[in-house]
Image (tube, rainbow over all chains, first blue to last red; front, side, top):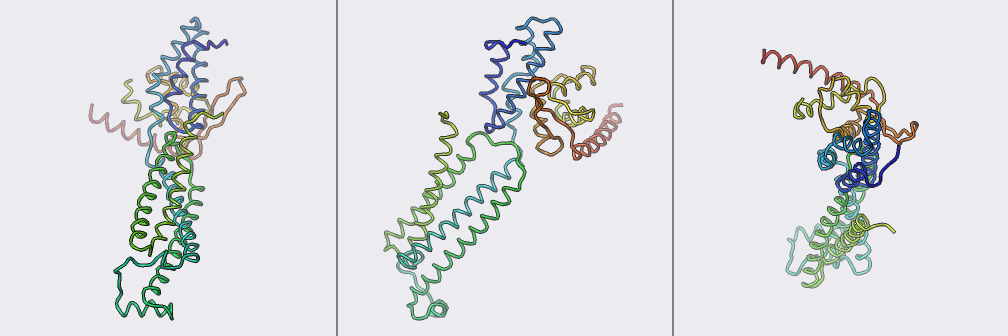
Length: 244
Length: 104
């Protein structure tokens, strides 16, 4: 069977390609199935006596308007979002874990007060000071509090990181569903971590402006968030820029 | 038959058509038209989103087949699909009896 590059079927497939949602794999598959179906229909119409162009027009008409066919592929269901949301959550938790590791490093270099010290004006009751100093004898109340909070920052963020690893395993085990629109996951990641970078950077600047105590916990989070935002931006650009 | 009536029953129809064996999309549509005596009139391309959805739900499996020269995706019913078909057939018969009782 001859294929006319300028015929109705090829024009239809070009139109369908522009409209199909989903990632490259899903689009390629849908397009390949449409092409096979259309040329099977053309062969049937030719066998029934139609000329090539008429057979192609009939096949395209029976297949349905490209917006209608492509629109059918775009209907996401809630279950289609589970796996991408779990992945985003896993990356977020792993990011928190990484920021915990960074906080630990900052604490070793610049001290616990830089990471988790209180802002000027903070105070504790005698009983609370005694609690802190029980675990960190030989330190003043605020230093002991900073050491305590520093330990919490590292521990809790590390736990979040461990949870992130579990979430990543869960993501791997979840069944693949319908693909999200091209670029959508990267856009969501960029916005989510970009927002987190903005908030944590603001908190770090605020702490720094008031003497620096406690800036480290926000700075470590901001650094990781900025890194992830940049990674998502790069991934988003690669999705839409033509490959060489 | 109007597409509004058909869209709600499309899963049942596609699963039923595939009980007679593995088929690619064009063959599925051909079987559907022949078995229904031409009663169903829907854009043929709209069957593919339904086939993909049934596959993602585990009711169908698919593979590429190039044995006839052209690369086609063929679909077959899974065990879960056969069970789902049984349930949908029962639901359809109940629905049909209910409608007939009302419109009689």
